[in-house]
Structure formats: structure tokens, C-alpha cells
Figure 1: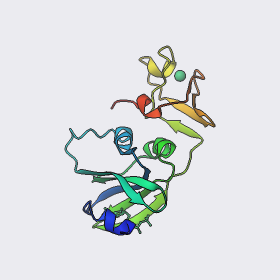
Figure 2: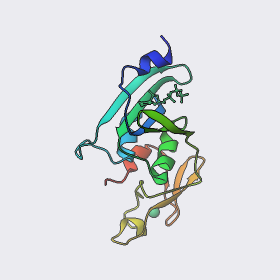
Figure 3: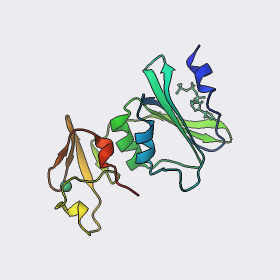
Figure 4: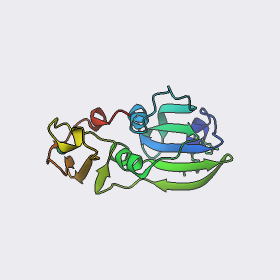
Length: 155
Ligand code: CTP
Ligand code: ZN
């Protein structure tokens, strides 16, 4: 079976965003980055560990009526570096781009240092530099190396 045949297992969407070529097994972490837990009622399809020529296995997330912010895309690229973002209008893909590794990620992640200014009751957004072995808080220099998804800010 080709990639295309497999993708037909999940129906097409009318308006919204399809995140394709997600690293196999990362779909639920992608949903966490997007702040989607299902309770706000949007239609979401998730396919996990689908056969992919390019990746071996890939996940796909389709969200009706949602466009991603650049901050969300930036963090997403760290856990799914081969992902493509497809914007769908009236069933057609009107825009497609691959994610790129950013040099900085803002918002979305929470600094693990409880004394960091970004985790106090201050209106300071988190800001991390993307470094070789993880991401480094630009305020307190704490480095998150492992398990990035555990540091996604709850909405
Ligand atoms: N898609 C969808 N609903 C639509 C249109 C597209 O869910 N109305 C999905 C497709 O199933 C596919 C992704 O969006 O997973 C990209 O669609 P398309 O560009 O048509 O597919 P490909 O050319 O196979 O994409 P790529 O080259 O990026 O692999
Ligand atoms: Zn910090």
C-alpha cells in the first residue's frame, strides 16, 4: 500500500490545519503543544504510527478550524522536525510548509526553575534559546535536555 492509501483511513477536513509527517508516537505531544485536550469541542483526528516511506512511521493530526501560531510551530519543530503544516480551506490544501528548527522558542514551554522570573506571577513570557542539547532559558540559563513535552505550559 502507498502512503496515500494509508492516509485515507482518516477523513479529509474542510477548513483547518493538517500536521503531517510527525515523528511516530509524538501526536499526543503535538496536541499538548496546541493546547488541545478535546474539552473545547473542536473536531480533531489523530492517526499514530502510520507507515511512511520517508519516516518509517509517522503520526498525523488534523484540526478543524484552527491555525497554528508561530510559537506553537516553533516548539512543534523540536519534537517533530520533519513535520509539514498544511492549511486547508474548502477541502483544498492552500498552503504547505515544512517546519524549521528555530533559534528561540517563546511561550508554550515552562521553565523548570520555580525561582525563574518567567514562572513567578509576572507578565513575562518564557523564552528559550535552542541549543545543541536542548533549550536554555534566556532568563535563568536552566537547560531542558530531556522530555520537552513534560514542560509544555498548560493553557
Ligand atoms: N488533507 C486533509 N484534508 C483535506 C486535504 C488534505 O486531511 N481537505 C491531508 C491529506 O490527507 C494529507 C495532508 O493533508 O495528509 C496533505 O495533503 P496533500 O498535500 O494533498 O497530500 P500530499 O501531496 O501527499 O502531501 P505531502 O507531499 O506533504 O506528503
Ligand atoms: Zn528560567
